[in-house]
Length: 108
Image 1 (cartoon, rainbow, N blue to C red):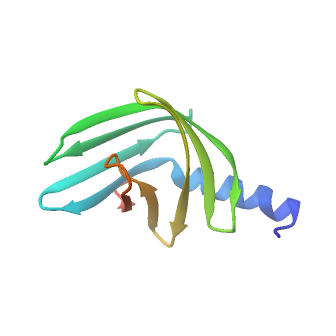
Image 2 (image 1 turned 120 degrees about the vertical axis):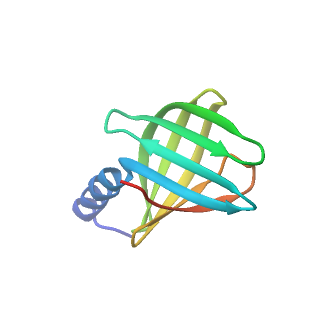
């Protein structure tokens, strides 16, 4: 269990880290680029096989362990809850491809 003050610090740290552009190589020429803003909006673009773009709003719902955040996304595909994990300079985040978690790396 994380102490409340430490949890608050970690949520702030991870929320700040989320705000940037991330890219993942899914193989076979398929890539995804995710951009999260400080204002709570996101866009994700998949190029290559199954090209698609989605976007909407995200809301941080809480801390998961010491390296993750629970997010609520609302947007073009409805509402969904999921967990993102920060590992050094990588973000483990669900892909637009159902059931796939991709490893995103910082673009900017």
